[in-house]
Amino acid sequence: MLLLLASLAPVFILLFYIYFRDKYEKEPFGLLVKSLLAGVLIVLPVLFAERLLMALMPPLDKVGTAAYHAFVVAGFTEEVFKFLALYLLVWRSPSFNEKFDGIVYSVFVSLGFAAVENVLYVMDGGMQTAMVRALTAVPAHALFGVTMGYYLGIAHMYEELKKPYLLRALFFPILLHGIYDFILMVEIGWLLLLFIPYVIGLYLLGMKKMNLLSDSSVFKPPAGDG
Image 1 (tube, rainbow, N blue to C red):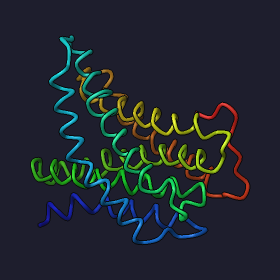
Image 2 (image 1 turned 30 degrees about the horizontal axis):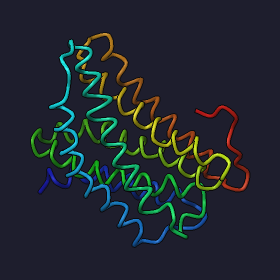
Image 3 (image 1 turned 180 degrees about the horizontal axis):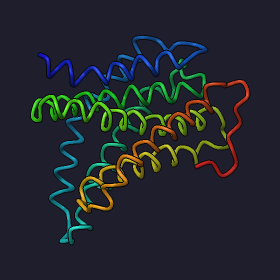
């Protein structure tokens, strides 16, 4: 029971944080629960897709294998299913009426997925794993969600930016997720030294994007935004 609580605690802390960052109009509780459950439910198709992609992996060297697992098996698969769940659930919802809402719903979907993943890892690795992942993997999933939701929110509110920003809502989370996993999977000493700075960079990038959308009245999408 203690391990279960340790694995879920960071998830709910981040959920409450994102919920209270939405300072204008709180999202319907029922839709937030559905978003969270959608993240939980995509675990099964993600596992199936990842196993299929692993079976289709061509012969590669160490770096190529790590890159394939990081960017294709994990990053691409997980973020595509998060995006599909998010888009199908909230894109046409009348409750999606502010740019920051994209971040809220996206983080809830991402953390639903992260909750299941974290429970599996913590139950296998114990309390030390719970402590490490509470500061790295769980916030990283939330920050990938912030990135996806940032672009989704802009795409939803600016018709002229819909197509390019929907593409960014998918591309950048895959890229950030892939880099995160690649640093860990490739097992190159000097590259591992970049892991903590990279996680800090994810935090700073996520906070910047949340701050940009938090004042919905003055925000304008910056030219060349990335």
